[in-house]
Structures are given as structure tokens and as C-alpha cells.
Amino acid sequence: MSAVSLTSIVKKFGGFTAVHRMNMEIPDGSFVTLLGPSGCGKTTTLRMIAGLIDPTEGDITIKGQRINDVPIHKRNLGLVFQNYALFPHKTIAENVAFGLKYRNLSRADAEQKVKDALELVQLPDVGGRYPKQLSGGQQQRIALARAIVIEPDVLLLDEPLSALDANLREDMRVELKRIQHRIGITTVFVTHDQSEALAMSDQVVVMSNGRVEQVGTPEEVYNTPASEFVSRFLGISNILAATCRNIDGSGLELELPAFGRITVPKERAPNVGSTGPAQLVIRAEKLLLTEKSAPADERVAMDGVVEAVDYQGQAARYFVRIGDHHLQVLNMIDQYPFQEGAEVSVRFRPRDCAALPGA
Ligand code: ADP
Ligand code: MG
Image (tube, rainbow, N blue to C red; front, side, top):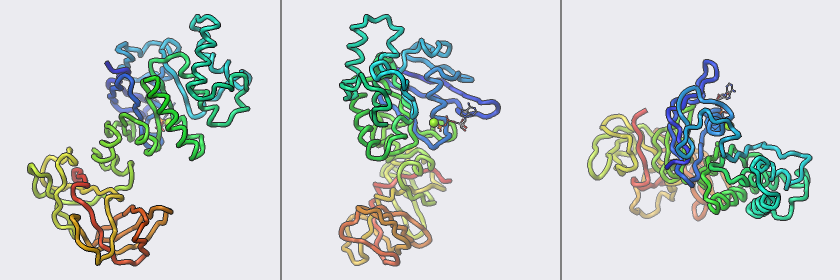
């Protein structure tokens, strides 16, 4: 059974539709991320699951029970928001114990649960302190402990790491995933950060303009994007207009100026069903720049010119022209630190490419 399911959910704010007929199944125990740019409807969706706002249409069930009309305090959910402030005048232990107040636990049981939750977030000794005595990252762990202490059916997290600085954010990613794994709690995580989504999720729901663009594992949404939006939102993609000349068991034969014909594996082009206009998708890191004189290998090789270089330390992003195509190439800097104006060979394997229907 799905832990959470949304069926034909619509949310309107006056005449504006923030969520359009959304369907979503969240398997029990899984970590599912709603990923999309600001304003695409992630928070609105999470708030409907939480019961903070009502859907205009559609059904929400949690553990098989329709909960549209169940008030928030009767839904057994844990919530953490970006700025879910702790109560400043309560101690950490009192903050964590807050959700247990209405659960009729003995004092000893409640204390034990608070102790366990603080241990889970690896802050066992801070119960007597006040929020302002903790760092931002520690406060966010406490917010997580407070959400988890009630043993919720589902944990709802809305950009919980966004307020933290970069290094801490990466540590907290690993930490949050560890905790989720350890207690096996169904988690719906909201972020606009694609690397967070790819690193943490079992399933990613990519959203745009209130609609679901694609649902899949991190590998699926990255390697086989269902739309131009998904391929541009995740990673750096080169998307080139092409013509599909033939489809058979070995794949799709695409033709494009300067490239000639390229055969893309069929499983990397699930939405291209017929010949005619199509688009070739090549990830920037799947292109390799070499010296023009480098020996031939199994890759397709084309001549190009480096038009600009965006140096990034261990890697560089090159802007390269091949005929009339402008491509971005992301390469580690090892033996070939190319400069602007360099004439290069641009190489790739057709099996690393994907294809989309024509724009
Ligand atoms: P996200 O979390 O993906 O950034 P939101 O779910 O917060 O996006 O918002 C989706 C859209 O709905 C935005 O255009 C936002 O302005 C609009 N919106 C959200 N809440 C309200 C509201 N209470 N009243 C009117 N419009 C809203
Ligand atoms: Mg939001």
C-alpha cells in the first residue's frame, strides 16, 4: 500500500491554478522528493498533504484512509520547514517533547522518547539548553527530532536545508538520509536543488508550473529525461534539433547537420514514437574534448572550436562550436587544459545520448 496517494489534485488560489490534476503514489518507507523551480507548486502540494490547506479538487489518502477532511492535528505527520523556528523560551528537551503533550504518555515514557530522538539526531547532550545556544544546523536537527519523536506516519520536509551554508548543507544531507534509512520513515522532501534531489531520493517527482513532468529514480530522471524541461533542469544538457530517419530494434537513427547520422538506444528515447522532427540530448559531461591529433577511438569525433572557457578548479566548462551548433562541454582538467580559440576534437558515444520528440 502507498503511504500517501494524491488523486487528481487541483489547487486554485482565486483564478490562479497552482497545482493541475496531480497524481502521485508514495510507497511506504520511501524517500520521495518534489523537485522543481521556485513557484512550481511544491510547497502547495506539501501543505495539502499536511492539511494546512485544502485541495480544490481531488483526494488525498494516507495509509489508505482518505484524509481530506481530517484536521491537521489528527493526521499523524511530522513537519520540518526551512524556518520552522523552535520555541525560544523552551529548552531543547521541552521543544522536542512538545508534540508528545497530547499523547497521554507517562512522564518516564515521554522522557525516554525525547532522549531517543536527541540521540537519533546525534545531539544527546543538549536537552537542557535553549535554541539560541545552538548553531543553525543543530537547531534544524532539533526541529527534525521534534518531528520524529511522535513517530509520524509520514515526514514532510520543505527545503529544510536551504537556510544552512553550503558545507553544512552537504553534511546534513548525508545525516538526514541516514536517519530516514535507520527508522524507515516515509518521507516527502521538497527542494529546488537538483543535486540534493539526486543524492537523497528513492524517487524524484520533477515539477514545472503546477504539473508533474516526470517521476523516476534519480538515474531515470537524469539519464532518460521525459521532456526538454527535465533535461534542462537536471544537469547541463545540449539539446539539438534533429530528424529521426528510422526506428528499429537497434535504436533511433537521428540525422543532424555537421553530425551526420547517430543511433541513440531506444530505451533512452521512450517518448519518440515516429520518424520526423526530434531532438538529440547530450549531457555536457558526456562530451570529451581532445587534441585534434589524438588517435581515433570508439567514439564519434567531430572538429570544433573552443569559444569560451569557464574555469572551475578541478573541471572546466567549455563553450564549443561545431558547425552551427553551440555546445557546452564539462570536463575534468587533466591532460588537456584547452584555451579559448583552440581547435579541438569533440567526442562522444551515441549510447550516452538521449532523444526527445521535436520541439
Ligand atoms: P514552490 O514551493 O514550488 O516555490 P508554491 O507552492 O509556494 O511554489 O507556489 C506555487 C504558486 O502558487 C506560486 O505561483 C505562488 O505564488 C502561488 N501561491 C502559493 N500560495 C498562495 C496563496 N496563499 N495565495 C495565492 N497564490 C499562492
Ligand atoms: Mg516552496
